[in-house]
Image (cartoon, rainbow, N blue to C red; front, side, top):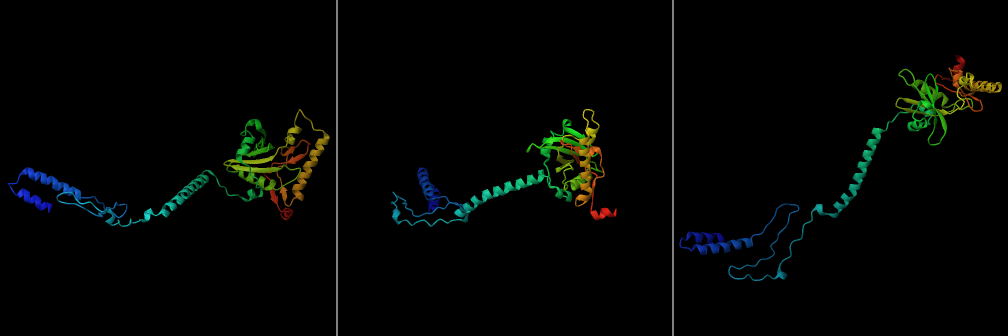
Length: 298
């Protein structure tokens, strides 16, 4: 209807252009009044409803009776607005964070922890010391803690930081041809032996290229250092006690234990003398174990 009115006005050449402009403005006003915005989309789209209207071409439009207007249709609820979705998201967030932290912990633990397969000799002597404790006990294996040097390594005096116990730590020289063999042999043989005339093996440690054995600390050192000492001379009672200890220790190895232990390196430097001048046989790096039936056949 509005379009027809525009055509009639402009087709009449006798029409006053002022009148045409005024009517054009009024028609544009009517167009603006009756237009409204809308949006499309299935989700999260705004809805616009015309519940009633009132207008007049000439004069004032009659008022609307709001009580007679219909109610708008109910708002549709999408699945995304359900409250249980928010509950699930709230529960999954801390669980996901916990699993992520656990995954990172396991990954870093496997990366920086060296897992080693325990061998038979390790199972026989399960007391394994931490390398850090032995490093602190010997003050970093400094030369001032060195108390002896043998064919298979050096011996250091140490004090365990946790208990304050004095120990002797033997650091075995490891080469491709030897070292590990003597280390395993000494643990396998001495780790199960318990006798008053044998050096007591407290435990062991294997860390990278370091092979360490931990013994009871015996204060008077080796027998050879006492025999050739110029500042100290053993009397005959002390010598007899030492000889008796040597004989009793070898008797235990050869006959009294469940197997026959052949030391194969019996010498004065491998006998350690305690404060009461009792002898303790040590350094079982070359020792071999035999069953008693096999040893009789040899």
